[in-house]
Length: 255
Length: 369
Image (cartoon, chains in turn cyan, yellow):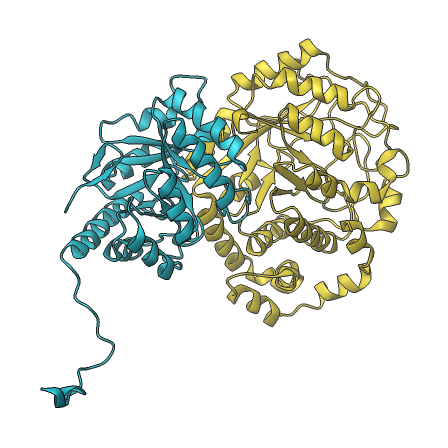
């Protein structure tokens, strides 16, 4: 399985993870360690930046994990930039999962504010990973302004519905010159495997692991699925044929 | 247009009939659906749904966990004042109730803040009666400025205000405003609120519209359960919620379930709700709206609160005092209502953890305002 490179960092695991919704921080720690994940996203709003003994961060203090602060909760580019700068200072990383959702119900990312904020943040030296709709044009625009990757959604956050945006993800993967990380909606290992088989560079999973009855084993299942899907992609999947081959080929008369 | 226009068209009796006429078949239909609508909500809170409570609770549990995970948000009320110029027939702060009145001074606010911060709380709900001259916009602005260094999230449960007032308070760091309609029954609203600014039904029911215009992050609504027919009131509240979600799509919503409890005023309960029915109501809200925050206070018993954690509630207070200055000086007899669950924060957290849930104290940051 080839390593994935984003900005200057090499990842041997293509499973990125979230840290929300777990029943306890030690459960989260165990599950994420088991997942093999090397990039974990943390909501700035959940972390207590005033103390240096925040419980979430304490449980993520492993060499395996690179932190990816996210801007969950902001509604505008302006708020996102402010939050990003705070995160960079407090968590000592210039990596950022940029998420701007003015709609708190479905948590749909705002394409206009995201492009605006990403442009500014790239100039300020951030490694920006924007969470966006599976919008091929927007993904190209973000690539053009210098984001390190794009993170299109498979279906609404936390919905576990899988790759409802499959047709558009295929276009994004086909067109992209930066890594494509399928984020949101991946509810089962089979969804993750499918994204990887399609050629996604990585997936980000949170709810499906955190809310499982056994988060540690579910993390293992996702690890295996992501690896299986990726190896299958690299080994070139056989094409599925829609119909059986005709016994008398239509062009045989040319032979 | 505001919600007042929509609620004005509701015929209370007809709405009641449309709830009480729901059948077993309607309930089963609602339970089979992935996404319930208002008619399903009526069925789920109707008497016909009572035999299906376990099934309703199971669905609510799964939907809540999918959206909110195995977590529960904790908050604590901070009573700033019990001065009030309203007469509300059910409230311990009502103007005609003879209790000593108190409004916290700056140093008292900070004293309370330090104590509840020490208890671990990071989301605070500021509560007052309605005394617009002494406890108005300037008082709240000052209070938010004083409290901002201590808390990540500040909410208000005070008298309804103007849009421009809300805009000023949001700029100071206000995140959430809770205003309960108490009852949507316009005729009887007047009987329960005979005097004071609160007697203006229209101004109160349009509060959430003003909050939406002011682009508040989160707003809360609810009815005082038991004051009027709780089923009809809850359907009106659900209609209000659906209206608000459509118009103010950038705001988040939270619904609370205050049940009438004994207080210094004392009022006859017209429509009491049993524990089973309250569970039914909470779970019906979850089936109607997966993303909605559902909140519970210490008015409820320890047994009820411990078990409701898994069923749909996502935000809960604990270890609360409902009198101004109550954390620094307990037992002054200035309470708005009696609390039932008086366990310490530590005890309650232990219960949450035993249930397999993570008690979340911080889920906001002032830098995001």
